[in-house]
Length: 147
Image 1 (cartoon, rainbow, N blue to C red):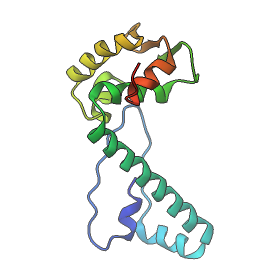
Image 2 (tube, one colour; image 1 turned 90 degrees about the vertical axis):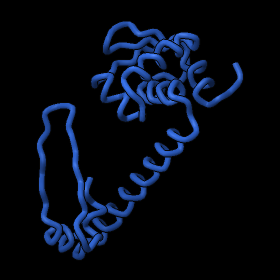
Image 3 (cartoon, helix red, strand yellow; image 1 turned 90 degrees about the horizontal axis):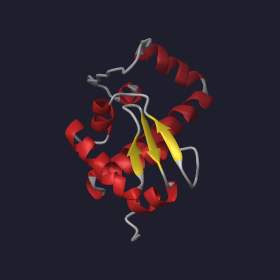
Image 4 (cartoon, rainbow, N blue to C red; image 1 turned 135 degrees about the vertical axis):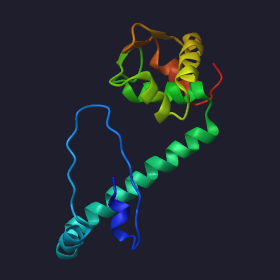
């Protein structure tokens, strides 16, 4: 996650938090830059990764600016579905407060949004399972289409 700091001449403050047990690997910038200097394939891979990361961040900003909290939650749930249509049980792998933070809302707003999504066939089964009764209906709502 600190790849951009490799190319910055000053300090690059970075922090992170994990939601499950993790292992941290620290690679000194000088060692990483030496590897990149010697391997064109690694440079291309690094550029591709940074490009895709920027794309994801731009999409997140667009969602925060253009979508309502309920639409952001619906879009998040759609990202966890495996089916293109019909019913789907979605399993949440992290706490509601973590999901709320990822979506730019408070846990209370997330709960309100989940209640609002009932209109579109989204039913909370338990703390970690949500039933999406009709994936297409939820997709239409998140896209702002008239139902």
